[in-house]
Image (tube, rainbow, N blue to C red):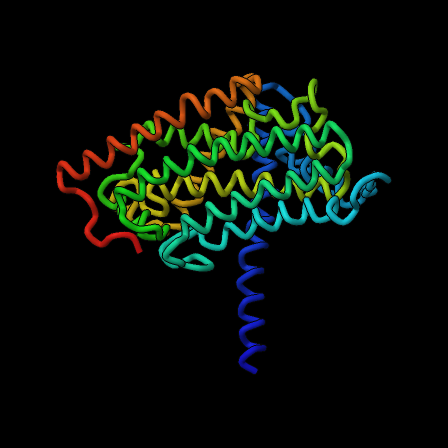
Length: 335
């Protein structure tokens, strides 16, 4: 009976994680398209149904009923596993994200390392999808995407070190609680900007959506996918975008903490502030897609390795020096 109780308890936790994220992805796609529609005067996302809601519903039904075609020369097992791995890893990373002080699936002491490990594994799904398609365009798109993700993961990792030096813990709740007096976006503002731009590149969002540059590689590693298998890549991408917005909120914007500790702001539930900050960051993602032209690939890689990486390393040295000089290093040490 103990094993049965554990099974049902874990299943309940998984559903509690999956259902809100999948619903959020659907809503965020609608919100994304609404922003593009208003900025670029595109009619579809804003007039099909009330508030344009039927446009997203129509696309979802199209993916569900569209035939799944697997190329005859493809490695069928790897071809099928690739989108499953991509979507599963994107959803698994949410297990340690705290939406409030008491609302989370798992509270582990190495939450940052867990997220970093899961996001790094996401490269495998993309490489598998491009290689298994047995076509030069998906394979080139997969290599390009993998190089892009790995390059900007390095910058994100160094940026996070700045936050960890100020907190002294790898626990996400500790990082949020350390910002009760001052959000880290103030002293670490340059790192916040670099984190945001690196998150755009990490999730293949414009202006860094090079893997699916229409004039070059058709649709990148997704070229040979259709139906629900394509939708799994798409769901994984948006789940990762929301994850980066949530991580940015936790690292720099105080997570679920209220902007000001005065009435009536301090009585509003923390989950409201967390969701509001995620939506604010996602709005910036959507606006940039609508107004910023695409980078060339050489510009993208130069920005990551020759600008962001050296600047992030210098800022780590400056942060550590400042904390040591003024005796501000946290005493509890890393947990």
